[in-house]
Image (cartoon, rainbow, N blue to C red; front, side):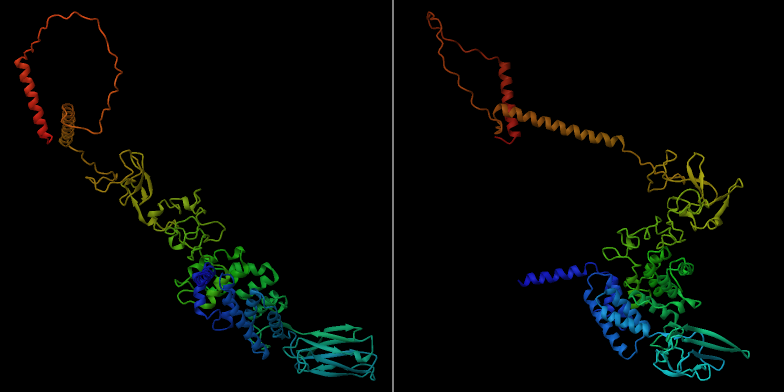
Length: 606
C-alpha cells in the first residue's frame, strides 16, 4: 500500500515539473515558495509563473502575499501607487481575487491628484460664484474631496446678488469638483455660474467656467486626474499615470487619460499604454521609429522592451525582439547578462519573448534543435558562420528572411548565392561577404595588365572553372572533375612537380612475380586435394577404409524358382586341371599388394 502511495506522489511530482523550464526554476530559486523580496518582484513573479505548468502553489502563495500587503497599506493610505498597480495587474490576471481587485481598484482610482489647469486663486487670478435668483436665502458651496464648505448668501434687496469669491481653502491643486447647492431657495429660474477673473498687465479679463440655467444644484469639475508615487501626493508622473490608467482599464474602472495625452515628450511605456487604451496609431508609429534595429527600445532597456513586447505582440512592431532578448540571456538561465535580475527575468518569461524547446534548451527558431546544436539558430536559411546576425532572421526589418533576400540583386537568394555581395569574390574567400567594398583590396595584376581579384572566378585554359591566385594566375579548382584527370576524391600525398590540379599520386600495381607465387600455391592445394580424394577412394574399394555414412542395404532376395533343364546323359568323369598363371601377371599382382600395404601405412593402418 505504501509503495503505491509513494509511486503516486512521485508521478504527481513528475507531471507537475515536466514542463518546467530552467528559467522558471532559476526564478523560483531566488524567492521562497512564490514570494520574493517586495510587492513588485512578487507581482512580476506571479505573472511569469502563470504561463508555466506546475507552479500552482507558488502562484497561490504569491497572490496571498500581495493581498496581505495591499490590505495593510490601503488602511493607512501608505501604498506605493506604482507597486499597487502592478500587484493589481497580477491579481487580476491569475483570477479568483475579485474582492481585493475591486477594493484596490477603488483605492487606486481615488489616489489620483487633480491638476487645476486654470490656475489656483491668487491676487491676479480670482474665482467667483454668481447666483441670479428672485428669492433670497443661502446656498452651500462644497469641495467634494475635502468636505470643506462655505455659505453663499443670496441678498435680493439690492436688486442683484453680489459675487461670492472662492478662496484657496475651497479650491486647491487637488480639487476635483465644487458643488453649489441652492435647493433651499425654492426658485426654479436660478442661474448659477462660476467665473474666473484674470488680470493681465492691469487689464481685467472675465471667463465663465460653467453656467447652468433653471437648476438648483450644479457640480463644477476642476482639473484633470493624474497620479504620483503616493496617495494624492500633489505631484504627477507620466509613467506612473500610464501604469494606473492601463490597470484600471483592465479591471473595468476606466480612468481619464486626458492629462497624459496632453503631456509632451512621453516615454516608451507611456506610448505603449496609450496605444492599448486608445488604439491610436500615432503611438504605435512613434514606437516603431524608436525601436533599435537590433530589436530593443531605449538604451538596450530589457525591462521596457519586455513590457512593450507583452502588450503589443503579435504586432509587426515587435518583430526581432525575440532575437535580441535571447542574446541577453545569461548562461544561468536568467536575464540580463552579466548580472541577472528577478524583475527582468520574470518580465521576459511573462512576455513570452523567449521560447524554449521541449527538452528545456533554448530553441530560437522553434525547429526542435537546441541552439547550441543548431547551425542556423534564427532559421533564416543562413548558416551561423556566415550570418552577421545569427539571432535575428530579419536584420533590416523588411519582412523578408535574411536568407531569402537578394543583397546584390543577381536573382539568387543570399542563402543560395556563392557571392552574396556581388564583388566577384566567393563568400569563403571574401573578407566581408556582406560588403562589396571589402575584398577588392586584394586585387592583383596579371602579366597582360588586366586587373583581377584574388579568389575571383575565372576559366582555365582547359575550359574548367578556376580561381585567381595571389599572382594573378587562373588556377583550376581541385576536385570538381574538370578536366577529366581531376579526381573528385583528393589524394593525401603531394604529386611531384607541384601540380595545381590536385590529382592523387598513382600507386604502383603488384609485380608479376607476386601474381605467379599466388597461382603456384593454388595449384599445389588442388593437387593435394586430388591425391587425397583418389587415395581414399582406392582404400575404400580395397576394404581398408570403412565409411559409415555409405552403407548399402541388403539386396532383396529373389523368389526361388528351381529350373529343371533337360536331362543330360552323364558321361565318364573327367577331372579339371588348374590353369597356370603367367609370371608377368603374378608379378603385377604382387606389386599391387605391396602398393596397398604402403597406402595402409600412409593412412596409419597396420
